[in-house]
Figure 1 (cartoon, rainbow, N blue to C red):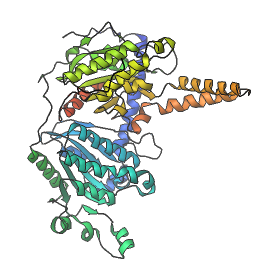
Figure 2 (figure 1 turned 135 degrees about the vertical axis):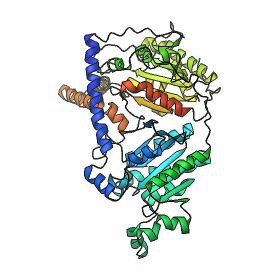
Figure 3 (figure 1 turned 90 degrees about the vertical axis):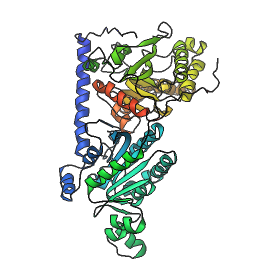
Length: 539
């Protein structure tokens, strides 16, 4: 295969300035990650330990096979929301249990008893979606007080979907396991109730639809936790518990045994190389590849050459480019990551008609060959203007969106810069169901940039005033533009987007190859089968 020749100059002042800015962003995210890990804080953690309980992350660590990675997802869910604990009181991610890649969720009981917030429902829902798409066995480490009652209006209706999803996973032949370590109240009780296998910790797990206070209010009956919903009662009387664990470590041992006994088989092909070649270029250099200010409306920014990213991610920096002389602002071609073959579509500029046609063609080729696709986004959108419209940009862009919409090979999306307008859609944005989607800290996502959006609104309001014969208030216009730009800038930031679970996590650029490799391994747990069926293309 052809080796990418890097032209990056790490010694240039522009590179050094952008690297410095990226390093600062990475440091800020690392500090926020410590807040996520700290969970409920020292006092809450101390109380939890005094009860003889393991922390949620300790449970996950013990469940995983020794010295295997854990790909945590949606780590900063809820970070955009004032008053919400970043991480949303739950842990989700993909890890290996008894030799089988599984989706794992764990309630963070040191934060409001592990109760479910809207962000937690979104994070857990995304984990279930990934489990279903990639046929990953689903393991819930449960200790939850159910819905966060003061926010019930935001949780009740969408939160019920999680129980349906557990049932549908099981119906699709994807195993579901629940290990219950503490209270599992109200809606939380349906997690073990809907799971195929349940393990309850003796003298610790308590599972009931209505706890002692609600039971008293509803029936007048006085009942303690053990009598109402204790682990031994469920093992001996109700039959909810399939296994009664002596303690938390015993529950984890039983959980690992359950997964081992599944004999679960991966349905996708194995990697083509057992010992894939490392990229020829240092991943550290990815810190300065992207401009610090991503397409923020100002001009003169150092452009990003997307092949410099690929050169530091692909096995051996090898990339066989497709149609390099046509539609050159969309880079397409074949490569491998950790031994897994991928077709790649990567932005090197705006999408014109040739780029759109090339992208649609390449997506069809990848589906014909049953090869997963990696979309690398740095895109302002499709070209606009008279020449573009006359040239058929709408119908050509529609071809690419048609191909993305109906492609059935797994999609992975990496956002290394801007993701604006319909360019987000054509490059398999969140609405187009990529199996995984990750972003760099400099990522921006919106309908368009703040400056452009504010300008469009200004033009529309000015023309409206002219049609009505009214004077136009320039001072108000300037104030509205500034407010709009500030709002869009805030709402388009990577942390805001990931807080809303528009992606599966912000990653350190240096970890890109590792993260994509783990994600590719996960998607191969399910079948990799391309589509031969598309909506009619408008030619």
